[in-house]
Length: 412
Image (tube, helix red, strand yellow):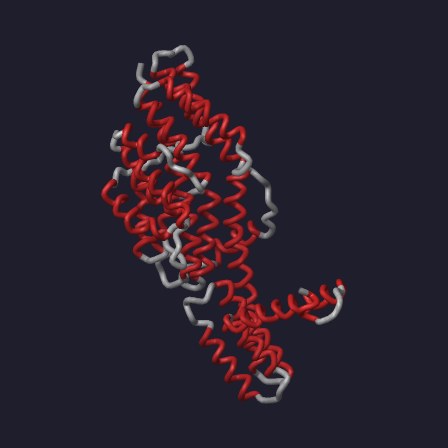
């Protein structure tokens, strides 16, 4: 092939140099395409070029055009705030060089823009770090966060800085799990202060809060969770770029099933299954239909639905294996219950993907399900000790079901 292209004997050095040039050309092309697609960045670069000319008319005209563009609600907040900061910086540099009075006002606006951009990013990603700290039990350096929160308690308001105030309250929610913060944000997220990207972030943390609280036995938050999913659907935020994340599809259906909204979830699966990846549709649909059967106490039908399904997603397989165990628990079939528990334990031991957290919560689910079955069969020797341990253990998959079964077995 080298000879056909270059019409000369093979030269390894020449080949690598040629490929390097091609890669560089492709990189330049991709950079250019990205730049042309990013109206904010391309306009700011144009403004940077205009700084070298002594044409105040053209510079001011471009500045006004960028300011108008930055009012577009579809622009992500980080891009908009960065664009505003950069615009004020370039404007200050330009008018300061010309010794124009506008430079004083530009300096104040630049200073304010630095604060706004910094606070937005700091608060937004503090939520992410705090959330991971709770899940992964890791320590992160959250420098300046306490100072920002102290400052925010005195200076942030939904009237003056609604975007910053919203993320300030979100940090408070993640840190303290307060219902007052949850109720405020559930309403405030629907305001014009947030664009689509910010709304999805806030809704995500509201969902996590509801899941965490419902897992602790606060059943009212299951209804709250369902209402949030309905809000996401009504606002067109559940599906992104004509795609629905498998995790969201599973959680929406699971929440509706647990609330026994069977007609609603059947309509949901009919309308939204085609938005999830094609390879995941059979297992996702089977899992949800089996859960509907389970909660309607159609246990044998649920087993038939689950049989023969090839799971392409780990979390659906984990959920289906735990569902099978629950089915045989309800059917009082200890032989098949025990066999599936043992099979599940071996599966978790051999599992090479997934987190240690997933292994832990499902192993705890198996352990406590076995204990509940033994209590159910009349083994009351360690009943009070086991029940106390179940109540204290937070890290259990499907903890709500385990707690429900425990309640039915608490009475002598």
